[in-house]
Length: 239
Image (cartoon, one colour):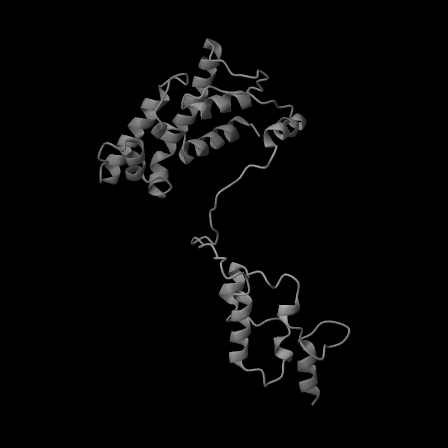
């Protein structure tokens, strides 16, 4: 009898053991669907305090209660499909009044809003403006600005060219798919080595293109450019 009583008490931490377990349906917020982890582990992980329930509570009752909780939301509400990483991507909406709040947000950083030319290479112009603490309301492509921005662009593309072989080997970059995106009207090579060489040539070509030149939307900065920019800033000591 002593061992049984010890087992019953060991499953509860508190001043006294409750005489019955509170129904989950009465808890505030239980009308919302469970999280992903709860859905996946509901069948294998018992609810806290479930060990103290009477033996007359059958497994079928547990399944029925779980089903009610999982589907307790509105009938028309559909749970968004989840990706393999456990999250769903939905649309974004800017906060009301954000254009007026942004300058205030930049004050502690001694920053200011600067408009840059929309010629398809705004990523490099924005990087130049942010790293040079520009206070001008609009960035003008003067000879000095173009010279300095081109140096930044060349450094970024040089890093992309250096990283390309390892990126392909680690499957961070798919050269065949990237060439299809860059040149949709041309068939991309099927061989990975050939596609890698062609992508390297493209990077070299774009490295020599001036930042004040217009480029097609296919050549706009993608994830690989942003990643190289982060590496450039890290190696330059910028925060």
